[in-house]
Structure formats: structure tokens, C-alpha cells
Image 1 (cartoon, helix red, strand yellow):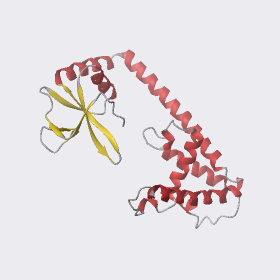
Image 2 (cartoon, rainbow, N blue to C red):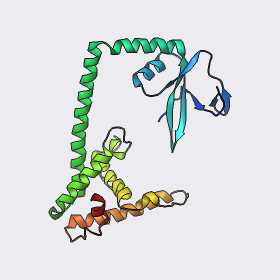
Image 3 (cartoon, rainbow, N blue to C red):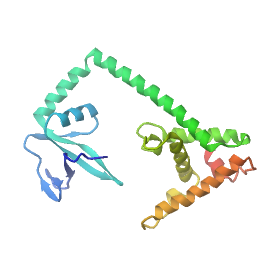
Image 4 (cartoon, one colour):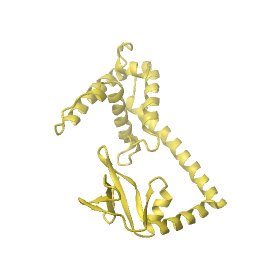
Length: 225
């Protein structure tokens, strides 16, 4: 989550009726209430229409928004206005049109991404079935909206996303990575991932070259079963 510089950011504290801001405990302004995240349209209007505090917390290695503190009267007015608009048939029609557009866009991306995965795999024809299964598995895991995987980023070409997604899937499904005890040393996790990626590339090469593969012992074949 990226926090705008002009936003007044507070953290939830263990002290009743107090919030943390830059190491200090603050009570929310009189007449303010907390509005949980979840309704993007409501949140946008509350942010655009007046003062608010953004309440956040840390989840794993990132900061997530919990919601807004804002004036109760303004919240009720904005909510009422929004509910009225959303009950309008034209709004519902527009909403349905947007939903269909997003679904079509997602379907096209699923196809594009899966095709990119198959191109990256480039398995020999004798291993086409394995390639198809792997492409299906990686695509199903990586492309859902909100998955937070590399497949959802737009900062790199889809070909690179497909490659990174395959290597990530294999790291979790064909190695002991998830159960490894990795020293908290700078760069150590990156180095572990690099070594595991090399192992995965060796496995992929065997299928690309068309050589014999013992599918009973191969970690990739076993994972796909």
C-alpha cells in the first residue's frame, strides 16, 4: 500500500480511544467515527470531500489500510447520497456493463498469460501433456485478480511475468522452500531462491530437450499429480 504524503496517518493502539501518530497517542476528534475499508466508492468520496485520518497496520512486510476516521455527520451524508445513486437503474446498468468488461478483460488476460507460460516452457512434443498441466496450474494460481502475484504486475512484460510465475510455482510446489529455516542475514533468502530457481531450470531443461524423465521421481511430475 502506498500512503499519500498529505494524508494524516494513524496506527491502531492498545490504549482505549487513542490512536498512535509519530510516537504520540492521540484521541480521534470529537464527533468522528471509524469507517472500515471495503467500500472503495465510499472511501474515495470521504477522502475527496473533507478531513479524515487514515488508520493503518503492518501486515507481514507491508502497510495496509484498515479504514478512515472521519466526521460522523459527513459520513452519513455521503453514505446516503451514494446509496441513492446506487439504487438508480442507470447506475446498476453501468455497474453491470463494467462487470462484464472486467470479466472479458480477465478472460483475455488468462489466455494471454497461459500462452506466455507455454512459450516459456517450450517443452518437447513428447512432454506436451506435462506442459499443458503446468501451464494450467501456474495460470490458476497466478492470474486471479487480487492474488498479489507477479502475474498481476504491469511493471514487466507478460513474458517475464510468465517466467517468474513458473519459477515461483515450482519453488513452492517442487522444493522444500516453504519449510526451510533461512538465516536472517541480508541477501540470504534471495540467494536461497536463486539456487532453487537454478534447480527448477535444470528440471525444465530436461523436458525441453525431450530426454527421458522418470516421472515417478521427478518433483515436477509428482507435484502435477
